[in-house]
Image (cartoon, rainbow, N blue to C red; front, side):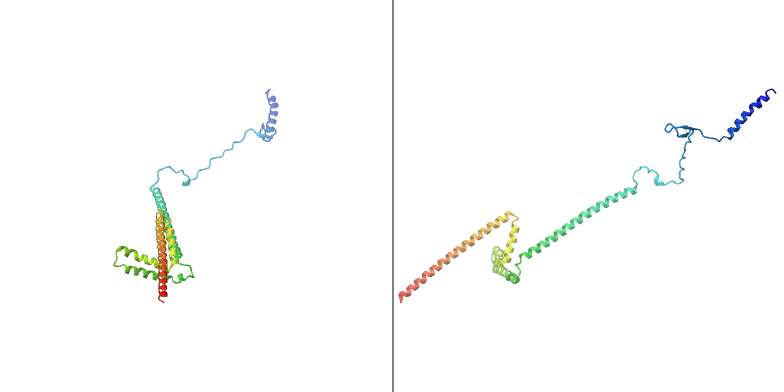
Length: 243
């Protein structure tokens, strides 16, 4: 009983402290940061926790990693078909290029042949151009006449005389055309040195023979004229003496 007033006396401060704690607003303890001394930071930071997303119930099969395995028969068939298609395409393309080259060469040859034949004709407006067809007929008739003349002769004359007569008549009837033909033949002979040299040698021999024959004929003609003139003078002298 003696301590009861003492306990009552101490209970008053305890009760007042408990009431003050109850009525004082609840504050959070802060600590100063080293970077900013005046900035206040909570002592107990809340740790942010982000949960993993929930996996989908039906994921996309395309996202699954493909296992490494040997090619299927379908893949091998597709690869073989690709190789076959490329092989056929290459050969078809080569065949197309070869055909184009062949047709181009044929067209070029046709154009060259047409230009060559056109270059053999005499110029326009000349008499030979107008008489080209009759002159050609004369040449053919002359060659046929030569073959008729030599029909009972040996094979060498039957092979050479008709051509020689035809060429001679062609040079006489169609001189410009034959000159063009000779130039064309010469242009082809120039590609082969052996033929060209033989042609020049034969041409030189023929020209020498022609010039020699022409000189001998002129000499014989002069001698004949001289003899005729001498005979004429003798006759005139004889006539004068007879008178």
